Length: 220
Image (cartoon, rainbow, N blue to C red; front, side, top):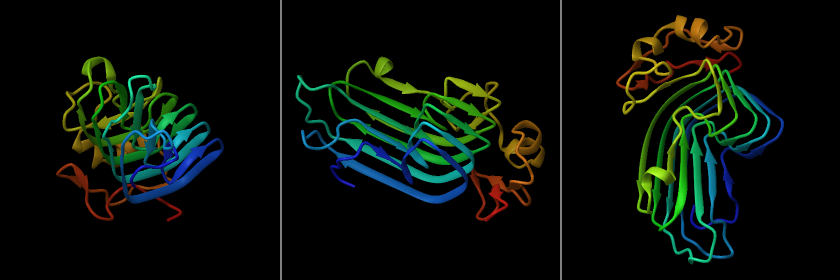
């Protein structure tokens, strides 16, 4: 997608209701844009939804999101913000019992502006979720440390959720490849229901689930 006139991207742009029992693979969101007054400036892009004001429950997403902003903003114009997450970009609601395997890439070529990136979503409640993700940020603006917000899993109310990242040091919220191969991890730690999830024959190696060997919904 080149310059666009919407600011929320995903399978759904905006959710104020309930999204449940949805599994999406092969997500490939690519957006390149530069500042023009008639187009959007800030962009919010998630694997399932751009902006979540409701509930997302028992869902998963696989794929990649690549966002590239070339600049061109005048100094008198408000700064551009970019926000991206594996399930949602911005979350003012609840995301629960869900997971993502996502690659997030953001390139920002302007003097000022803020980049937010999260495994699940920025802000909101995140409960019993798993984020398996890699990130790549190329930020050419000023004050990198102040203006690039790596939010980890994300959320400002994180309950019993984990992440797997190649670039992340071991901490309480991280899990190992052994965990991801264990049914007990999904059932006992993440508290996923076997009435909702098919957790048979899971194989996770070389930082990926094998084809058709990942947690799937029973309604698939």
